[in-house]
Amino acid sequence: MNSVSQNLERVREQIAHAAAKAGRIVEDVELVAITKTHPAEKAREAIEAGQTLFGESRVQEARAKIPELPSNLRWHFVGHLQKNKIRHALPLFEMIHSVHSLSLAQDINRVANEEGLHPRVLLEVNMAGEGSKFGFFSEKLRYEMEELLALPRLSILGLMTIPPLAEEAEESRKYFVQLRELRDRLQTEFRVDLAQLSMGMTQDFPVAIEEGATLVRVGTAIFGERRSRKVDL
Ligand SMILES: *Cc1c(COP(=O)(O)O)cnc(C)c1O
Image 1: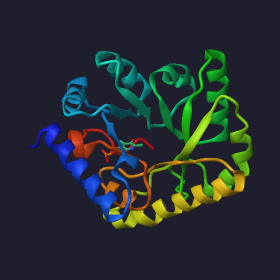
Image 2: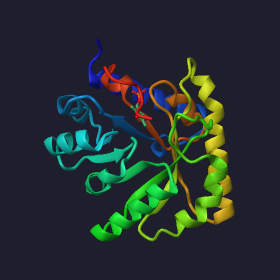
Image 3: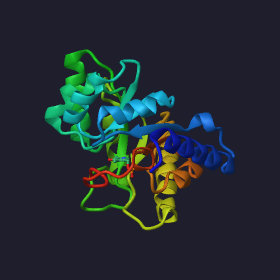
Image 4: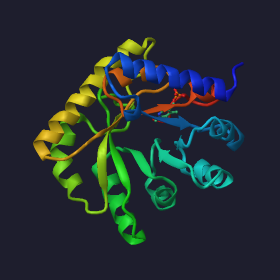
C-alpha cells in the first residue's frame, strides 16, 4: 500500500496534468483532502506532506478531529448539514460546500447573525435530478437565487455538485459541464461572482478540472478506502 504522502504526490501530479491539458493555471485548482472516517493521524501524514486544506462531512466527527490537529489548517464542510448542527459547524469551517436548499440557507443566515459570523458557502446542485440526493434542482435554483442572494450574512461564492455514481469518469463530464454552464447563466442573470466550482472526487477529479473545477474533493485516492458508504448524500 502506498503512503499518504506518495498518494498526495500522485494526486497533485494528476491535478497539474489535468490543468495543463485544459490550459488552466494549476494554482486555480485547490485540493480539499477529505479525511472523513479517517483518524487525525492520517491527516497528520498529509500535513507533513504539505497539505493544509481538509474537508469533513460530519459535524460530530469534525468537532472531535479538528481540535486534535494544528490550528493553522483550513477546513471545509462537504456533507449533509443538519439544521441542529449549524451552530457547531460555523466556527469550525471556512467554507460550507453543501447548502442544498433555501430553508437551510435561511437557517445558516439566522444562526450566523446570532453568532456574528459571515459564512462562505457554495450552493449544492442536484444536476441529474436524482430523487435520492440533496441539492437544488437547477431550474429551482434560478427561481430562488434572488432570495438566496438577499441573505445578508451569507457570502455565496459558487456551486457544488456530486454527479451520479458511475463506472467511468467520463460519465460525469456532462454534469460538470452543466454545473459550469448553470454558473455562467446565474452570473449573467443575477450579476454576481460565482467563481468557485466544487466538483470532482477520487473517481473523476481530472475530468472535473478539465471542465473548470476550482475545488476538488478527494478522499480515497489520498487516504485509502473507507469502510463506510462512499459518499454522504
Ligand atoms: C466522501 C466525499 C468526497 C470524497 O470522496 P472520494 O471518492 O473518497 O474521493 C467528496 N465529496 C463529498 C461530498 C464526500 O462526501
